[in-house]
Image (tube, rainbow, N blue to C red; front, top):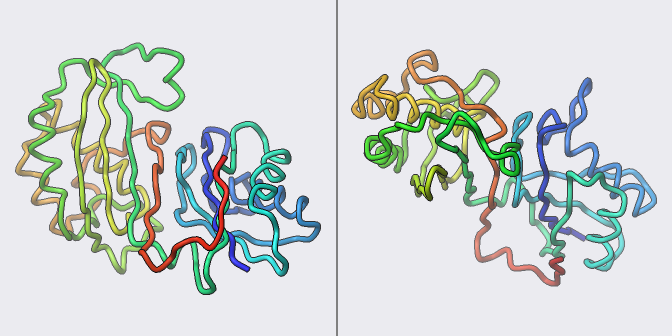
Length: 255
């Protein structure tokens, strides 16, 4: 039986989502907790491999169980065995064939900025300091160019899907509330480091270090070195993972 889990975590203490040999990752911690709950070792499969230091509000994963398990018990039983910076927020029993990564049709990321040299401590773990005089209008002009299907090689870190650098972005926006800025990207998939590189390049445009027109050039498969620097990891959060209408839960529980 396939169960889809929705997870939220602070990525600060972890080397990303994916299990690694020489560093602690979120996947390992969650697998250990569920294995302890179920009574035998098992593997979970995540929808997105968030990088070291990146957070998640709506990561999803699936686990295959040989026997039915109450969804409410799966949520609270796992959380009882997890550290406070990782939480399962929902569990749903899914139709046969569901796969947390292979069934994905879209993902949503948000990057948070605060236009001041001093970031309030209550939001500092999830928000990056930015110049107060950013030209937000220029950033908005540039971010619109990201929408569509492009070769995002200029925004991919080493180790990503460089043999298939084409991705489709459905939505790309920047919103502001006082000194806070939120970059929002929704797409069918993202290359490794892609969102952070996009944000770093957009910030260069907002600082006047490069023209809006440079974004169009970069979206034509240019080398990584021609784009801006990667923005810090702790400003980024995986907000939501989208699935097609055929993957309706058979049963579920949300905390």
